[in-house]
Every structure is written in structure tokens, then in C-alpha cells.
Image (cartoon, rainbow, N blue to C red; front, side):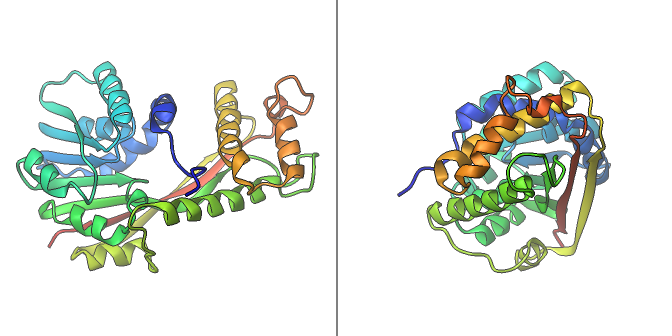
Length: 289
């Protein structure tokens, strides 16, 4: 089996902390909408560096936020991040190792009670069979509890259509290659099975009601602040690096990216004043009857 789609979570852990800090405002906006006054137990599935765990904790009067991930290196990053950012004893943030849906029973026992809110961002798509994973999460909810899946939306764009190197549409082709990479990754997961319907349908099939979707536009027009511009260039370099060994990018496109991502080259993206950030993030919500 090819390994070019395997994710090295230990290597990505520092990037997860950076991403959590960059997304702080988005997390807080959503947590403000999702957390109800009486919530006492929230769960962050596939927690990354626990950025959403922190946002949820800030919206709760008291209780627990359980930050769940299957990968020890990710949980270490979450633990370090929350220790640095959180000290209010009224709401505890507890890292916990568990994989969904395989270890649902162990997670239920560790929680000790049904959850008021479950958040899962870019996590369920790592399960080979996604519908049982959604159903398992729904089964952890208390009556009136909410399951929020942050999946889908539109990929982040940064570059003008013509960057002056290679064929125009360079970033469009990068997105297309990323989509093919994702298809390969899904096919190589243990027990992989297609889910030929959308996330709202998956929530309904899991027995949830009042299913809705909220999509948030994230837009930062040029000129970007220096720190944001560096983060954009680093993110593009990481994506190109991941796709380089897959054969999904042409030699001509890789040559163009090599120049754009080389700080010693006159075409380095860090010199450009027209970089931007534009994406749309979707959150799908269902309520336990």
C-alpha cells in the first residue's frame, strides 16, 4: 500500500498550535453560538491543539471540556497549549486519548455522563466508515445535546489566477491535486467506505433533529500583515511538500512552486503585496431529540 497519504501527526503537532492561535476568533464566535447556559460537559473530538476546547471553556460557567484525540503527540500539544492558556478551576479541560468509532464505549465510560455539546472539526473524515462515526458521536449526547461537525466548505485561496510563472491557474491545480490526495487517503483508511450523501443527511441518519448548516466566510484582503503573509507562504510550502512525492502535480507546476517558495528567488511569494486569504468554513449541527 502506498504511504504518500499517511499523516505524520507528531511532525504536524507544532503547526496545530499555530493553527489554533490563528483560528481563535473563529472558535470563539462559534463557541458563543453553540454553548448553552446550562452546559456542563462538552467534548472536542479530534481536538488538535485544543483551540476549540479553550473557546468552549471560555463560554461555560462551570463543568468539563474533554479534548479527545487518537494520537499521543497531538494530545501532548493540546495539553501544553491548554496549560499555557487556561487556569480557571470552574471549567476543567481534560485531554483524553480515544479513537472514534472504535473506542466509543471507552469514551462513554470516561465521560461518565451524556454530553451537552460535541464538536468534531475535520475529524470524522479520518474514519474509514464515516456514518457509524457520526452515529457513535450522536449516541454520546444527552437529550437536547448538540453535535457540531466542522466539515466541508471551500478551500482557502491566496494567489491571483496568474502569478507570472508557469501556466495560469497554479493554485486551482493545487486544490485539484489536494482533492485527489484526499480521495487516496480516504481509500487507504482501514474499513474505508464511501458516504454518498452530505453531512446533514449523515446527522439525520444518526437520529438527530433540527439539522442545520452554518457557513462562515473568512476573508483577509491584501495587503496582509507580515505575520499573516509568512503563515500563508508556510502553509503553501507545507501543502506542496506533502503533494510533491505523490505524482499529482506536474513537473512544470512543481518548478513554478519551487521558485515561488524560495526566499532567495526574486519571485518569492513573501515579496508579493497581493496575497490574500479567502475561504468558507461549514459547520453542520444536529440536536438529540
